Length: 155
Image (tube, rainbow, N blue to C red; front, side, top):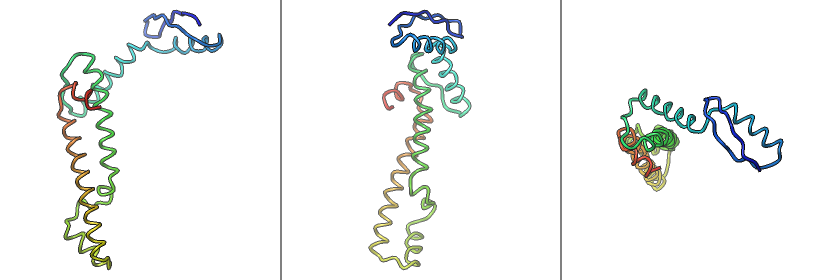
């Protein structure tokens, strides 16, 4: 165990405590000296998230500087997860969202599907449609939300 002074590529100097065999500590020190410090990394990530939000037309967030930096990243991640979930829904992926209940029923009847099976499939489609609509509403809410606190509390 030992304390070391690290000079990062960004020009900042930090003191760190490293554990383990000497060779492992030396390897870790070399790596740390070839990177920017954690503060600069967080600022860089926050600036990238802010630029992406501006390019996407998302509103500016309100809150403290730290809340905004964290919430920008959270918003970006949460919208991506929600959109991936939306596109993964079987109902959405099948294209059934474009069909009315009558069209689905007629299609299934033309294939000789029993009425009980048709009812079961319609119930499944209704359930998927409900999930789809909830997910869509969540995405829309995240795209207009301006409170950094909201993203932190709803992560």
